[in-house]
Length: 260
Image (cartoon, rainbow, N blue to C red; front, side, top):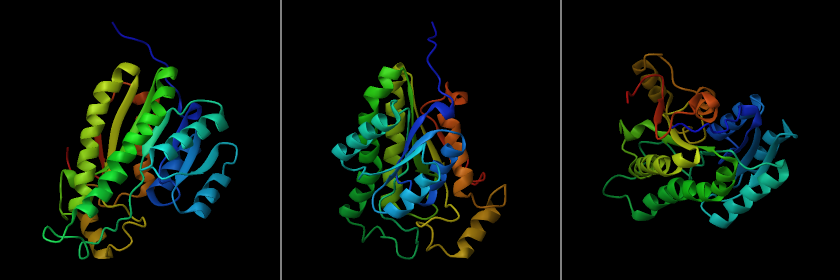
């Protein structure tokens, strides 16, 4: 027997985008604002950028500082968002990335990688997703549903450059996405991942030579490197009612470079 659950259009949603002051996070926040959603622009250090983004839609955007690795800070952010907008958080986008540069020459190799580097990425990806999920869960359950969308990487399927720490953390986040989807489905909460390749251009990819971008573009069916704006549109799919029967999935958005 099927259960009819409430489905919110994008312009009815209250969305928290972590790490939303710049790069991919800012593109995701702008995409939700474009569709009429209320958006919390979470940031850690980039206050000016976050406030500027929020100022573009002052009635529907709120900049909130919170370290997503800190459960108390995340709980306070969720509470403030609900109080400010007068509704529970309906959608979480776990985008925040610990300090990282996609620089193949400077990456830690197998014989130099230490656990502190590995743990920094796990804390920033998996612990952050645990914190946001636990903080938003009561409101989502009370509302009869919600959306959790995690940002991953196609390096899990195709580790063409062995960024050990970053890729291992995102692989763990993918596993967490799937186990959460199994448990939270009964509450009407979907949990999915959107995984990109190297994006053109974000702060994290600023150290990547143009020749690498050109090589990636030549290898994709679309003959281009995915932009943050293109990636953000795919995130919207998992938030909107059209994806109501999709959970536990990993959608790779990289111009067709990696399959599956």
